[in-house]
Amino acid sequence: FSAWIRKKREDPPTIEEILRNENYREEMKQKVKDVSEKDKLLQAKEYKEGLVAEPSHTQVKGHASAPYYGKKEPSQEPTSTANTFQPGAWMPPDSGS
Image (tube, rainbow, N blue to C red; front, side, top):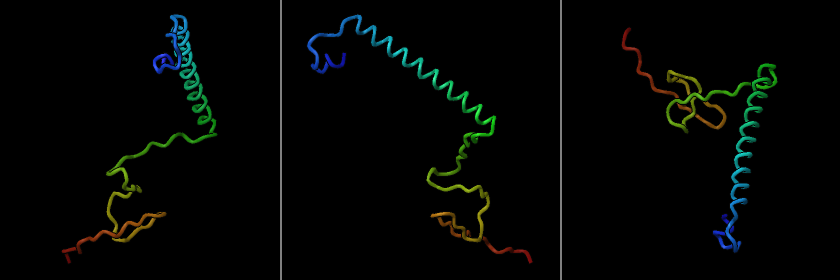
């Protein structure tokens, strides 16, 4: 159909060609679904057997580009992990003596 629209083909597609293409698309959808289901079952089996790790669940905190290393409280000490540097946080001195 697209070849005819783009004038790369002179005659429009026949009803048989259109139906054949639709059937092919449906077959491909079903094959993709079957392969996807088989893959999920294989992943579950491999996880159960201890061959692969289960996919990790990302924990979203704050801005997407800001690294999150699990710390909840700011630290007075600077920290460095790989190529990132986190300066220490200023904490007011204790007022009670």
